[in-house]
Image (cartoon, rainbow, N blue to C red; front, side):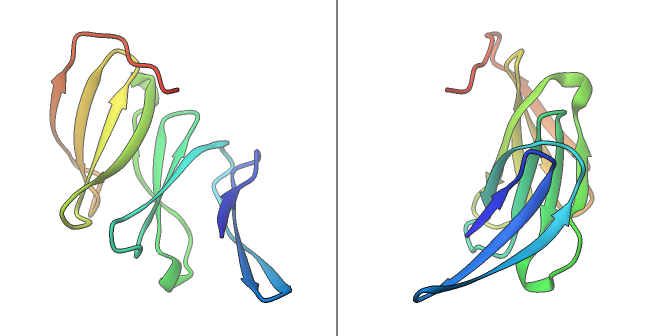
Length: 120
């Protein structure tokens, strides 16, 4: 079980029977608004309230890597663009949908929906 604390800490609970173990996986020092696993569960996207997206690979137990910083765009959410784990899609409050490379955070394309977006 992965979850995030208000302070921007990614925490893993390993639960087996009646026992559990807590592990702090990453500290990105920004409140995390959402977590999203890739379709094959090898990567985890961490989206912050400030519009930054990080990637965390549980099998590698390393730090979270900053992929993109869209804070000036009022970034709302991100998800993996399937099939595969090479791209993610994000959306801004203004309705701009963007595609990014997960390898290096390169912006690839966008389309504007011409409507304000809200997450409910």
